[in-house]
Image (cartoon, rainbow over all chains, first blue to last red; front, side, top):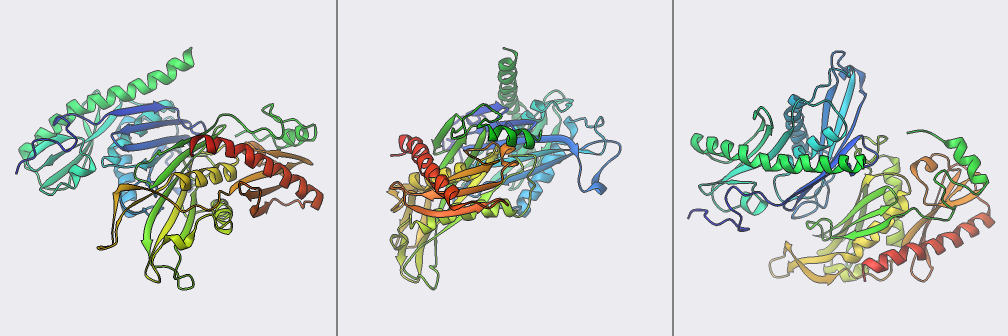
Length: 235
Length: 263
């Protein structure tokens, strides 16, 4: 058994349809909505603002702090208990690490830039959607950035390397590996790389090469969302 | 956020508001969008002015409570996310979120809005439990009304997932056509008193300037199912009577939006 035709009929390197919008939360300094397939994410950026508790302050630079949360009704099965699960905390940690290389907060010592992610509906690929949304929100907030960052998951389903797995592929009854990747647009460096499952080194390289192309598509959607907002402002 | 407590209070005494609205005027747009989350059994996005909340209903099968073995249950939870306002922080629900969820909960529970007996599958063993989560996206005031409207709208459009009584398995991927057994449709309206003026639908700035508030949940026929008073200023009986009249009138007004979207 080899996975040839994808469950939803996509090509192996085809992403699910994407939608993005910047500036969706008026209270926030920057915000975004990002949708890929049936996974939707809101991101809000607050700051730079004073960091509490104070012992976390860094006199040399501001810091980035992420918070990731799936809404209680966003899972495909039973209700998810609200609050910070260990999974959510770990995702927040890897998100922060992946976004850190693109922001320059040296102009804001002792301060914090908070990024809040909320997902109303999920169908796999949530941390990638979260990072892609966060990047738009950071740019929307006018946070100094050295590069744009986009994210998508590549995976291997029963021997075939495919882009942007949905939940039916993640839970496919065969060997599946899931590799969320975030990549900087100009440098093509990878700032998020996780993986679970089973994959050979050759296929891992193949997956990263596929990510390079796939991420360009995410990048285009992100930039378009920002352009749309600021063209509106200009008019 | 700029605090205009004194200005708001002075304006109110002249029947005026900071944004030029009438005292009994709701902000626009008022929108209700259904099925914003396909993973929920029922879900809506409600917007009043710049306040945006989402509500989602999840249904699960649990053991009924010992004192009501032939009934299902209901639970309402509200999350004031740090995404929605610079004033909120991550963590366990604060007192504001607790009050919000409890007021909306009482409105629905005490109105006996859901036929709890119809939620029972096997007395003492299995019953459907209805859980409503209200999540703020942008808080610009009047979460009671926005949250209450969202909760009711989500209940109205929720559909049961497929349930196999033989195996006891719930397939959340398949939604049946069966709606929740709703008997009533309680909707809360909150009236604020600022410097002797009564007004509805406050912005978050106006919420900082109020003396007293009264939330009144009422049904389509005007029956009141829950009341909650907030604020440090007492109200006279005459004032409460005026507030009730205004709340019932505004419930009718908001209900029109709901009826347009969900039949």
